Image (spheres, helix red, strand yellow):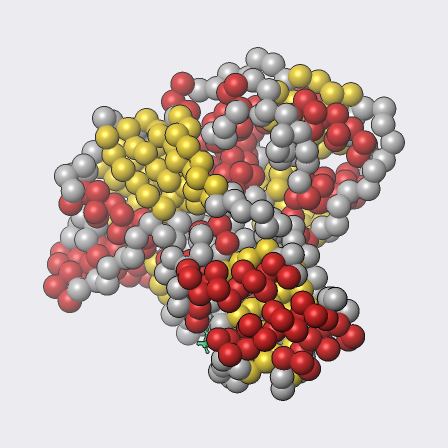
Amino acid sequence: MSDILVFLEQTDGSLPKASLTTAEAARQIKEAHGAGNLHALCLGKGSAKAAEAALSYGFATVYYSEDGAFDNYLAMAYAAAFEKALSESGASIGVAPATTTGKDFFPRVAAATAAGQASDIIAVNSDKSFRRPMFAGDVLADVEVTTDKKLITVRPTAFGEIAAAGGGGKTQELTGVSVPENAGEFVNLEESGGDRPELTAADVVISGGRALQSAENFEKYIYPLADVLNAAVGASRAAVDSGYAPNDWQVGQTGKVVAPELYIAIGISGAIQHLAGMKDSKVIVAINKDPDAPIFDLADYGLVADLYDVLPQLTEAIKSAKG
Amino acid sequence: MKILVPVKRVPDYETKIKINGEGTGVVTDGIKWIVNPFDEIAVEEAIKIRDAGTATEVVVVGIGPDDVAAQLRYAMAMGADRGIHVKTDEPVDSDGASRVIEAIYKKDEYGLVLMGKQAIDSDANQTGQLLAARLGVPQGCFVSKVEFADEKVTVTREVDGGLETIRLPLPCVLTTDLRLNEPRYASLPGIMQAKKKPMDEMSVADLGVDLTPKVRVLKMSPPPERQAGRKVESVEELVTALKDEAKVL
Ligand SMILES: Cc1cc2nc3c(=O)[nH]c(=O)nc-3n(C[C@H](O)[C@H](O)[C@H](O)COP(=O)(O)OP(=O)(O)OC[C@H]3O[C@@H](n4cnc5c(N)ncnc54)[C@H](O)[C@@H]3O)c2cc1C
């Protein structure tokens, strides 16, 4: 009988969507396993409050620590805390979201515990077999983790949110984590911020590509459309590399994966590396002046047009359609 | 300081990947192999660090069958000083790769390992972190800027919320993101010189590493096809379709 420990990211005491969908994947692993308990770990300022909130999802023990060592993220500190919580809970399966945090520290835990790790899973086949994309999503692989201890990172957009499920659990402060001396130091975080919805959690995403030609054009053509739809803004690698959009807006194989209700790709050709990050969106719209652009092969609605002509018009038309 | 740069061979990113009949792997016949693009960025950065005088030597290491030598030669043509080819025909998972690189690292005195954040075939994003943990050293993953001062390295990382800067003592493992640099092309003289650069060959057994995978591929299948929809003629038609048909407005 194995217990499962889930790493829940939290900000100032609240649990983002990615934490709840990761918890749902963990719940499915538990169900496939047929026994055992779910535990969780929250770290950093606000983690005591986040741990309380997590109890409503049926966790047996939610560990937390507001120790200053976790105020800012450092891989060695977070890995040490997760390892400590693993041994205290007796869990043999660890689960984390495949965010830049989960991707970064989880393999360290794998190495320290002699576990195999399945990365970025999109489905649970059993308590040891998981489905994950490879080759920019050209291949879906069912992989088996052959070790007793198993670590899993979860693609947050591939699962629904965990349902509330009775209490009965408890929170517990995690103490005595020893952070190695060579862990390094945090210098600063330059947040790209803004008041828009978070890219991976938004219902609508408007993405711009190389065709936008400048950061000013993103502001002039993409932002107003995003504003009327309360949308997050994304970008192709070409747009990010050219400095039209911040790095954390990159959608794709090597950027963020999104799956909103509506994805509008503007001046994006549709390279496989881009598609890998958005092809599970519910409705896809493409606007491109090249009728043969590969993005049209998967768009539900394609408009062959010059973006500079149609975007202001589209923004106005949506504004009035929404009343 | 010597820099170790692991280099993986992957199918060219423009290749249309096909799964074999049994669903156990991808068809490799006729594939164009390249250096994993993130590793190429790592090679470029290592060369820059050496040329700036912070490092003395750039050593590239590859794991795999005989023809992986071609990717090592490419990295040497870019400017790496020498290569190590660890030969095996077995499949190597992220964990196995990290253990081979660990063994190579321990044979010499390295101050830094620079490698790609992910290989564009397995997309696992693990090997650098596994290696750092095995070596007991810190890591700076997904880096877009690297600066050395006072025996420490300051790196900027591409994270979900923006750009994070951390400072790490050496030795450490750094993994590259796309914005770190634009790798140079191997020049013709570079290619000629690379042929004469030293390349050590050894087997996995020589290193005493057991490659039994911790993660095994059971079956590969193609992703569900997404049907193309239709072209609309005008903005009005698009907005009507989104409102009345797709019901997303
Ligand atoms: C290792 C690696 C990783 C990668 N990871 C990613 C990733 O995560 N995400 C990603 O997006 N890419 C990624 N890429 C890059 C990818 O291969 C493509 O190069 C990139 O997606 C292209 O961006 P784009 O569509 O904006 O530019 P382009 O391919 O140049 O397309 C621009 C499009 O705009 C259209 N256009 C031009 N002017 C107008 C106009 N006035 N009005 C309307 N349409 C117009 C053109 O017809 C064209 O289709 C990666 C590549 C590699 C090698």
